[in-house]
Amino acid sequence: MWYYQNMPKSSRVIPKPKGGRPATGRDPVRAIRLSDDFLAKVDAWAEQQGDAPGRSEAIRRLIELGLDTAKPPAQTTAKTSVKAKELAGEAIDEMADPEASTDEKASRKRRLINGPEEFREVRVDRPKKK
Image 1 (cartoon, rainbow, N blue to C red):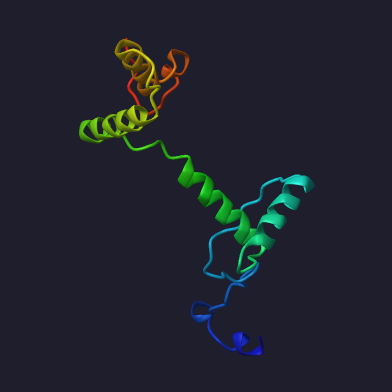
Image 2 (cartoon, rainbow, N blue to C red):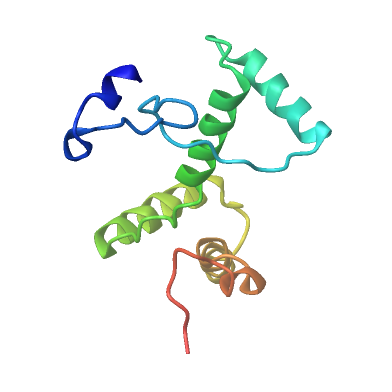
């Protein structure tokens, strides 16, 4: 500091001290609360992985898996739907009761292809009927 005393005030440059930890160039830390039971499950999952990731990496991977599966299913095209119905119909015809009448076979096939009426409302791959 002795050299600042001999310099004119206008040319004195005092460096500002930098506080805190230096930047690492990584993503910032996010804090979340997790129960001990949940962490035990995460740790058990991580041990089953081939590369034995650390807890943070295991949580990131599990979140990625969850986000990938949480995406809504892709809407099927009309061509795909027709092909699926044809394949289902062929499989049903192969398993059909040979002693049932033609009308009974057709009725059973229609119920199997369309699915139970109770579940038709909750199907996410079909638009809601009004």
